[in-house]
Amino acid sequence: MPLKLYNTRTRKTELFTPIRDNDVRIYVCGLTPSAQAHLGHARSFLFFDLLRRYLAHCGYQVTYVQNVTDIDDRSIQRARETGGDWREIVHGYYRDFKAAMAQLGVQEPDFEPYATNYIPQIVEMIARLIESGHAYVSKDGVYYRVATFPTYGALSNRNIAELQSGARIEVDEFKDDPLDFALWKFAKPGEPQWEAPWGAGRPGWHIECSAMSRELLDAQGLGFDIHGGGADLIFPHHENEIAQSEPLMQHPPMANVWMHGGLLLFDNRKMSKSLGNFEPLPDLLARHDAQAIRLLFLQTGYRKVMNFTEESMMAATGTLQTIRKGYRALHQRAEGRSAPTLHATEQLTTAIRNALDDDMNTAVSLSKLLATASNTDALVAAHGGDAQAALGEFHAMLDLLGLTPHDSWLIVPPAMLPDDFVQRLTAVLGHEHVPAGGAPEEALAAIIEARLAARARKDFSESDRLRNALTAVGIELKDSKEGTTWSVVV
RNA sequence: GGCGACGUAGCCAAGUGGUAAGGCAGGGCUCUGCAAAAGCCCCAUUCGGCAGUUCAAAUCUGCCCGUCGCCUCCA
Image (cartoon, rainbow, N blue to C red; front, side):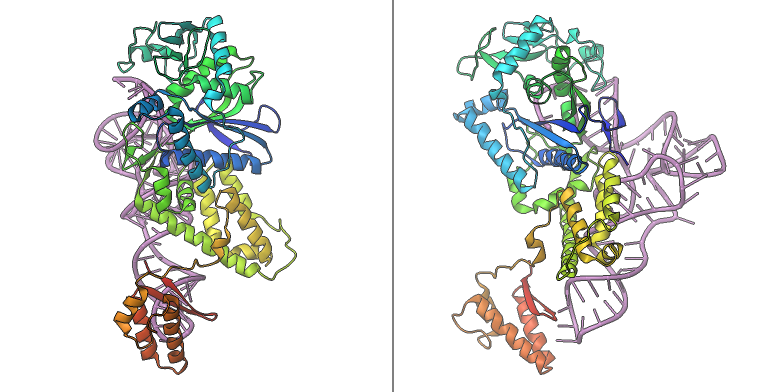
């Protein structure tokens, strides 16, 4: 089953066909690090990370570009407010963002261009737009003349006349038309600036993406394969990118497939910098398992608006446990086996591929994975009893979905005993089994040993008394054939 | 006002004409002294409402109700 993707440009789900044989080129609008990144950003980049993984899995050679718009009005304003340096502000937020992405298992882009490193390309593109009559120099900057691009609005399904009558477009005395947008903004005193033929200043938002995608993915102007971003970028950002790029191309469209991720709501409202209703990503990642966050997003279609709640986060955490248990069970069965003969059946792989081929239906693909995780016997049986092969397939699919198994999945993490453990234990049991001044671990070991001795002589009332005592101080015991283990109850 | 998305069990969510995936939570059973773990099983005659098309509708059409997004910086 071939891959089909929904294309915002045509408003249809279409067969995906690369422009250049096996070579797939993707440009995703990255971050403008003028504030902390939030979960909405994570959702978007997590999705494009998955898309990239899947395209690679399908055998394509993928080039993935994700830009950094490191100069914008907001970061300048922030620098003015705090008295800091705009570069430091931007780089600080970006560093946090990168760390969060790494934690979420998002692969590094092949190119991560900073807008300020492409000023010459930006200036050149603006010059060509002026030459060709698509842009004009005004008093406070250079503007794009929207009226010169007849198909403006095609991506977002709007028409120019309608937009012009819209009451919400800011009227600017230096623009010939309210729809026109800035390509270059002349610097006011004290603002960061770069030299340009029309006057020193900085690039407007939008032009950096046109210039950098051209430079890195499409020097010939033949278009590239996929352009992605959040749904809130469709208008005006992507519309403007098209207007800037396509007049200078050999063969429009700028990008064959335009893909947009649904926005994430928080408390039923859009997360946004301006509304301020979001929890910074680093804070959220400190509270929740990064893989559970990835899993949470896999459960919902990428184009759907999704509402984040603490409850759904907890559910995803539970689901992740199911997956880890399944993996652990498979791993145990596979141990000691030899000669892994993969490709025995690959039923799971086929099911997951079919789901992803259908416009990246992660919810269905995940359900296939979960059916396996909670019934590992079936997967092993499908591999003719070869647990090693079953494990290999399961592992590969987890990796494809970005839920790469970690060694820690195989062990129950050693819990930390609370600092006041001995004290609390003494309060419950006295010094009966608790050596005074001993380490918490020793005290616990002593109790466990005493209980095992009681069990050995079938003194179950004593055994239960000790279990209950430990329960009272928050320790849960588990008896198994291998011995007694404990964990801290939260 | 224009454009668009969504409304499926307690919660999340898949399903776009053939009789409701999956997860979380909940319940039952088996097994272990108890407990936990594990395994097995149950959990929507019904898809916001009302009409209509059809042999057949959660899926198509119309109207209505509700929630949200874009149209302004935003993933």
